Image (cartoon, rainbow, N blue to C red; front, side, top):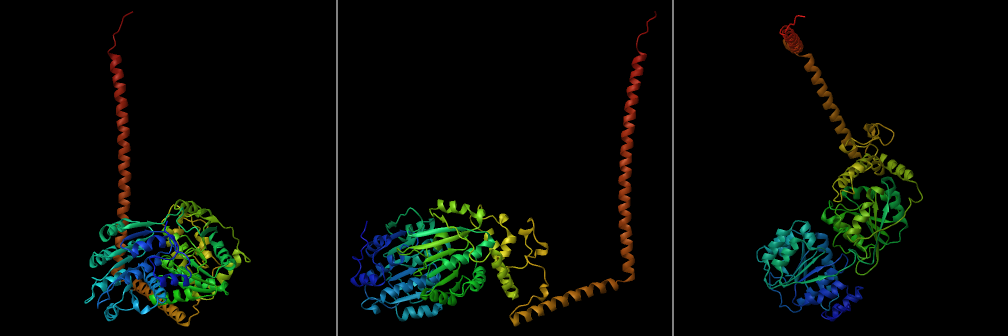
Length: 576
C-alpha cells in the first residue's frame, strides 16, 4: 500500500499547505490516486463518501499545471465537472484555499462557471479576458461556454468528472458525451464515482485510455469512524424525541434532513419555538440560487451551536467542515441517499454520528434492509424529555390557531409527506395503507384533516375530519393583513357567485313558459305510460309462458294414460 505521508509527487509548498489546512496524513484514496493522476494515467476512482476525493484530483491538477506551456487567449488547461452548483462552488472554494497558500497564487487563475450567477455572455467574456488555468463548472453551462465563439479546447490537459454517478442521475449523459467530443484525445481523465453504472462504463470506453481503477474497499458502505443509530417513534412521539435528541446531544454543527421542501419550511418555524438557544438555518431545492448559497455560507462559517434543516440538495458532494451530527428525520425515498446524507459527518478521518427515525414496527424492516446494503445501525433508546407528547401537540396546535397561514403550511407539509411516503422506493416497508393518517395529522398540528382518497377505508376517522373541537373556519384569520384582506375578498366573491347562481336557478323555474310546463307534464305522462305498458306486457308474457307449461304438462300426462289403456286393450283374454 502507498505511503500516506504527504510527499512526492507533491511540491514542497503543497505539503506545507496540507499541514496548514489540518491534514496530517493522506487518506487511502489520496495516497493511491495522486501519483497516478499527477503522472500520465487515467483513473477511475470508486470510494465511499467522505474519503477525501476532492483533494485527490485538485492536487494533481495543480502539479500538472507546472509542466504546461503558458496559456493563450481562449484556452484553458483543466476542466472539473460537478453535478450541482453547490458542489461546484464548494470545489472552487477548496481549490482557491489551496492556491492561496502557494508561493505565488497569481500563477493559478481559476473560474467558476455555473448557472444562476452570471449569464453565458458574462462567463464567456471573463473567460476570454483572463483565460483560467482551471475551470470548475456544471455540465450545461460548461457546454455553452465551450461552444462559444473564440473559446478553444486544444490546450485542455486534464478532465475531471466528479460524482459521475450523480451526473447520470441528473440525466446529463448526452451533455457529457458532447463535452467529451469537444476535448482533445491527448488528455488525462479522472472519473470519481461512488458506484459504477453502465453509463460510466461507456465513458470509460469512449473517453479514457487504459484507465487504472482505484477502489478503496471497506467492509461497510460507510466510513469506519461513522456511528449510525436508529430511533423508533410513532408520529406523535417523533417531535418530542427529536427535540430531546437535539437538546441533549453534544455537537456544534448538525444537519437535519427532511423529506420535502415544504417540510423544511414548516418544521423550521416549529423548531424555533422550542430550540431558542440554537441557531437554525434552512435550505432546500426550491430556494433561488442566491439565498441557497448565502445560507450555506452562513452555516459553514458559524462557530456557535447550529443546525441546518435541509433536503437532499445538501446530501451529496458538499464538504461542510466540522459537522458533528447528522439526523435523518425520515429515511430517504432513495436508499442510496441514506449513505450520502450520513456521510456529511465523519469526513477526512474524523469521527461522526448519525441517527434516523423509524415509525415503530411499521418501518422496523428498514434496519435489515440497510444491513444488506452494508450499512449497519444500532438502536438508540430515547424518551420524550420533560414534556409529554400531548403537551407538545397542544403547544403546536395553539401556535397554529394563532395564524391561518400556519395551518395552510402545516396542511401542505402533511400532504407532501403522504405523497413522499407513497413514492418511497422501499414500498414493501413504507406502506401508506398501514400509516396512521389521523395520528400523523395530529403530529403536524393540523386542526382538520383534508378530504383525501387515502382516508376512505380508514376506521375511526373523526366526523368532518376534525382533530380538535369543531369551530367556525370562516372566522379563522390570517395574521398578515394583506392575506386576510385577500381571503375576505375571495370569500365575498365566492358567496356573491353562489347567490347569483341560486337567483338564476329560481328565475329559470319561475319564468318557464306555460306551454313548456304542459309539454313537460305530457312528456312525463308518456314516460309513465310506457313504463306501465312495459310492466303489463312483461306480466302477460310470464302468464302465457306459465299456461303453455301447464298445457304441455297435461298433454304429456294424457298421452301416458292413453298408452296404458291401449296396452291393456291388446292383452289376450283366456276363458276359464
